[in-house]
Length: 172
Image 1 (cartoon, helix red, strand yellow):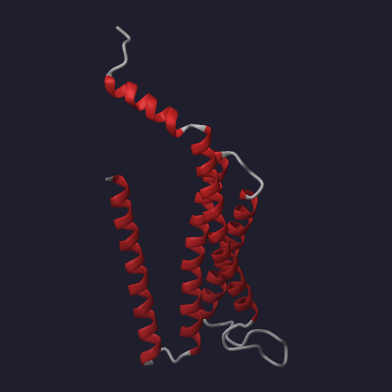
Image 2: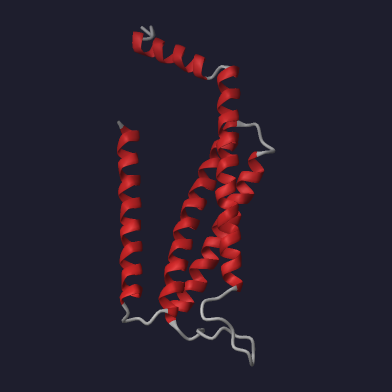
């Protein structure tokens, strides 16, 4: 009564092949290679957002060294989103670094997926920081300020649609 169906038998054979030592080693090697490429992106985001935190839009007041645009809402949004981008990208850098000292497939996959997620969110926060930084220094009623906001909104819409399309392809 407990005879496996042909489909179950085939599944078990495929599972044995994919779980072979050679396949695991190749998979681990590929995860580490991709992690190295993503590490570069995360490190660049970290560098840019760190530098942007010290070269604030509008500059500094010569009397007390405080940021000139501190009272503006767009400036505060810049500081918050730049900090979020920095924290997320540094977290991704650490996760990619930790990937170099692990050989467990499950740990590597989790680190990689979290690092990619942090990098993507960090890029989004960096784009918002850039937009709010430009917006705060441009006259609010000017064409360039409005154009920049519309352009980045289109960018985020395109990214959203791309991820939605990738999700559909993956489920098929």
